[in-house]
Length: 455
Image (cartoon, rainbow, N blue to C red; front, side, top):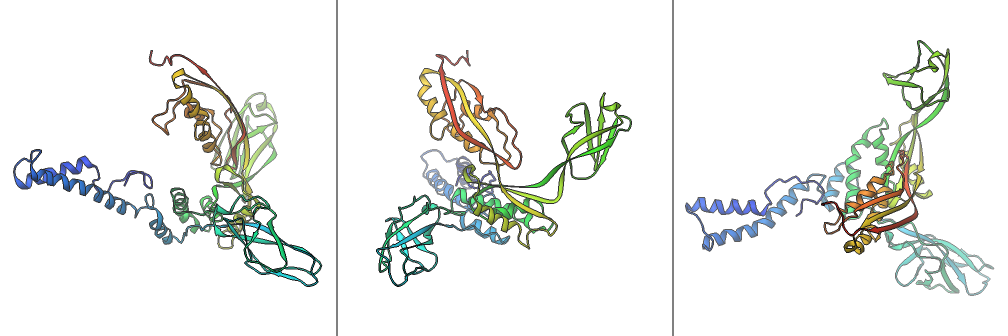
């Protein structure tokens, strides 16, 4: 098995074909007491043993490494999760609303039984509850759930689930009134699903604390929905102003949980320096501030016991109200939240950016470079996916430039000679924010007959 399985490269036994060959042939020669030259039947037998030993050694290596969380996958990973009480998040079925219509007004009520199914010919939805079309009415709308769990049930527009499977007297028509949505594949037995599950197992010990550590809140938030990509637990802050006396050109403010970054003195962000140690903030003023008898300091501090959980979904999407509700319930459970904490849940705050750039290539590599930069799965698409998938990741145009000039995801690709990036500009992104691509991308390229790198 390749070392890439589960990440890392810990080798417990020899799996290198060259090393095994040397060990087995050398061992045979030592046992026989004479060299075995090519063509010798005994050497040929040894070479056959090498061919059999390599896959066997790899299998043993893979089985042995799976006892470690880093390498475990599939059902072995499930077993490791069970030790900490962490189970794989199951798939969730998509939901919609089914509207049933009678052929004509009836004098008696018509009952739509629970589990009544409708289909488009491929996917099936069944009603969640019994419904009644009252006498004198012709329609009723009922919540319905896909009979198959996972994202397979998502994305069917209104009116497409329109064939009644379980026939009901007098019902002439059925259709979904809203697009089907909400289906999630959960933590599947794939590389991505295993990686998500593995990360929850890794941080699970933090959930055992009752003191409300950051990683515990992250762990419990991620258990709420398999589509959650990233979570940040942030201490809420507030900014206040305080009139302070100046003593020998300095101001002293005591207190824990202060956040001195961004403080101002008399409305200025300069003209002073500060140190914050052992819960004491010392502000050293420069002239003319040092000549004042008192100054007004604007300062931020963390609010004791106030926690904000910020959630980001797959592909940089923001969570809907249903996901936020599930996360809120998970982190506010009585056996999770410390009694002194007040916990709120919010979607990530998007920080928009555009892409506008010009790159240079040679005529010989023009088509390949254009595809590499602008094509599906190319440098721009990869940058957007990576930039927008993690909370608090600064918008960094240098990373985009690196992707374009050094496309290391494929050894056959040649990067651009030069890249001039007008947008995005570098922008810091806070923990509760996420970079969000606006969709505006403007690219152009120039040609140079020679790269002039080696000359």
